[in-house]
Amino acid sequence: MSDDELRALREKYKNQLNQSQPQESEEAVKERKAQEESIRQNVLRKILSDKARERLNNIKLVKPQLAENIEVQLIQLVQRGRISSKLSEEQLLQLLKQFSNQKRDSKIEFRRV
View (cartoon, rainbow, N blue to C red):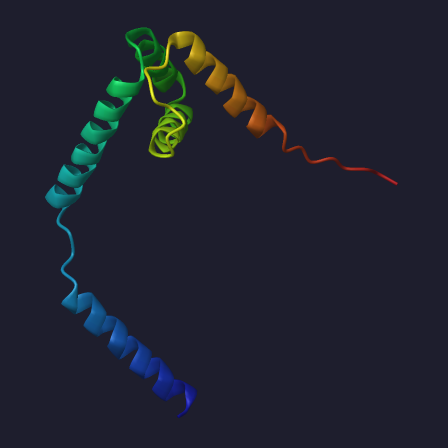
């Protein structure tokens, strides 16, 4: 087979796949995201004290991406069984310090010769 024939077969196969898999509507995507967010909030409500949740919400106002990363990491810790009781604000702060230290460890040094 030539390259043109292979490309034509690939395109035909891609088109068949796209047609066989229904595309999610915008409403379905929004509904799925809302459902995921509610699940995330329920898990966080179970593992964080009121003060810790308040602190995390304050972080979310200032740095939404950082807060989302923290939430994901907290949920992963729960899934792995490393968090079994509610975290206080002090414990959340300790975790935040650990997370920030991990990010700061990666440094790039340039040595000029």
